[in-house]
Image 1 (tube, helix red, strand yellow):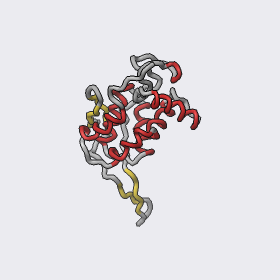
Image 2 (image 1 turned 180 degrees about the vertical axis):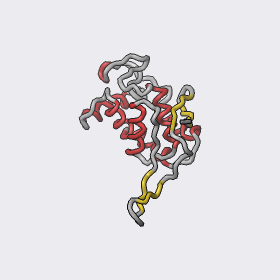
Image 3 (image 1 turned 90 degrees about the horizontal axis):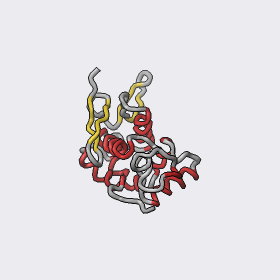
Image 4 (image 1 turned 135 degrees about the horizontal axis):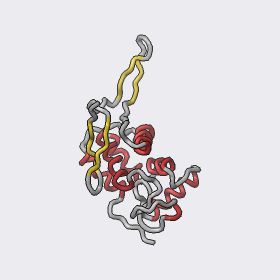
Length: 181
């Protein structure tokens, strides 16, 4: 089987993440369920060659938002890959530690660095009973985080290039910010 690859945007370069061909599906598909009954179904992207962590985040992004554009998803996934390799319990520099043990630098999927974003992860998980060191807890926080919510409409529009989506991604990831100890 020949796989089609989409070049994913990242902060420092590009990473490749395979997606299933054919070209992007339309925003909505119409499927016949029973004779003469039509139901609209939102198209979703799958990534069978991705790790289970990548597949989980891709699925959650599509289920929890209105992002259907392949390039928008590729931009988000590429930034996460660049920041953490989808390793949730990673502290800046590569140490694998729990949320409470990362004292300097960024932490987690997108390397939350500012004290507000870092504490936001902990507070969110305390309120919603999730583990701030886990993929599930961080994915929930990432999607609900105020900074992501501010840029989310720019990813939901669709039909743009990865370069276009890198503009809101830059603000979402917070490139160049350093947390003070």
